[in-house]
Length: 306
Image 1 (spheres, one colour):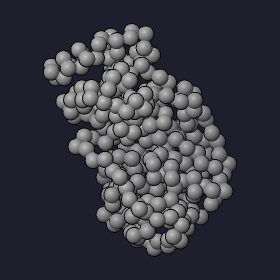
Image 2 (cartoon, rainbow, N blue to C red):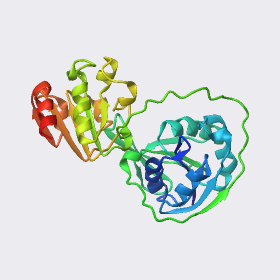
Image 3 (cartoon, rainbow, N blue to C red):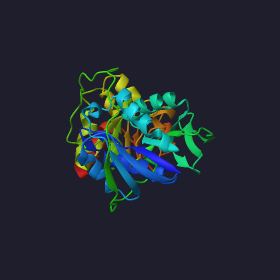
Image 4 (cartoon, rainbow, N blue to C red):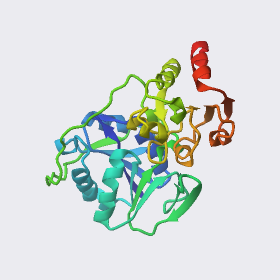
């Protein structure tokens, strides 16, 4: 079966990590053509990914900000040649794919964490406490991929790049501005190490302890929803069911009790370290290493010794 993979393009550049992980899933469904709605340089980068049969490059100003309406129209104009339309489960794809599915009158199979075959998929439900197996009989399967559960496809590809015309812009929406927080730290969803703080940190000022440890480790900074709701950390640091899903090599949870909603966003991490003064905290049930200690003593000491 032919698969059309919508590449993740951010700031005019290919988001290689998200696209490569979605490619790993897409290859299990059939021969993959990557659609790049963005600059030609992003299409060239996509062509180097291992396992790509062809790259379609739509270098059109209408797609510069990945607005759902023009991008969905582009995907629909190509959909007739493909049995699957796939994208990484990013903010952009979660905006575009429901519109694509509605226009095709099919369902969205969201947050796929496993591919059984070309028609059957696994996805987490109940905050990740159960895995649902879904078989779709739709003529076109519209699938978003939870990238944290797939390894990234490697480099070494040499796919042909074909330039295609855009599908036009009906003017249904207009980009106004993006407010983007800039940081020298790694991006949260692709970082190899994440250090997160919870309500136990106590205040926005004391969150500096978390940041100092993260900087010492070269890590991204995360936060529980309780910490974000309390104003200790910004929204884009939130890890969990209603935040970002991460699966780094090392996840350090500090002052986080381990509510089920938070665990849903980080329990696939390779190694989990928890620091909490409550020895009954649920976070210790998923942690590989647990330290029952006052974070205000343990974290500065850990940072100093590192």
